[in-house]
Length: 360
Image (cartoon, rainbow, N blue to C red):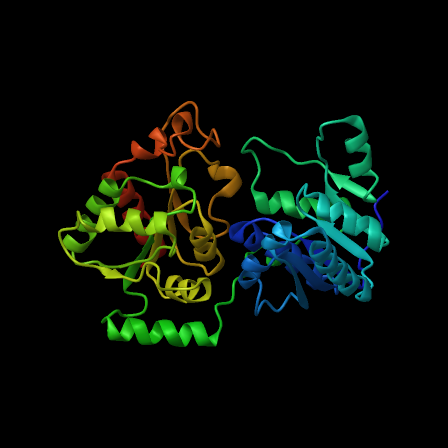
């Protein structure tokens, strides 16, 4: 039987990417609502998803580059981390992936309760080792049938903590510095808060990204009817190249902030937008966390599992029988036919319907 809540202090572990970390915030909010002091363990490059979050007491980080260090240096880094975690005296660990590091931490810290997803390993021994690392394991309903937030919350349900509607929302806090920075940029570009469409058309995984031609045509239709468009993208070479190819096809200029904003500043930009248009990536989840109406284009990834959470939205897909396949583009090409088949008219129709429904 699961142990009872509340606990005094819990560690929530999510060693994945930015969007994955943001989708853990309802777990943190639910624990905090039950009077639990919450810490988080994440990769250091994703910690900005949780800074300023009032439900998080402390953020512990692992640097992805530790894996490239020599054996002695690597051992020193992890030993220092484990010592810092041990000093916090957690009586609950919530591990939200099948990453082995969470199992080692649970074994070393030995809290009163620890929970993780059931995992299918390469051998019976590995399966037993994983299961015996935790006091409880919860089943994961895969196959694009349940949203990731609900799957995360199943970890708490398994140990007797029930979420409420009030704690299921995503939370992202840009912070005053980012908000001030974006306000100054918008004023200098003649953008009125609430009067522009924020578009983040790229993803670090190109197979989730629409065609430059389609996006250029959509933006031209928006600017032709008087809409102000503010463009953003990450500073990676691949996304810069995509933005350059798309921008070369535009008939009218737009406010282009691609590659110039950090994630807190991007959040402040999205928070001030009339609506957001993007693909399955962290900016889409940030828009949901900030309550900005969202149009999301989905191809090979599952829209039920990863779609905008608890925000007015429209999802644009095409009826390919093979989606969502989760593959790196058709045939591994990084180009997904189901995304390429989306038309600008479909996206524009979805946006207009969303704007009417939200009165924006």
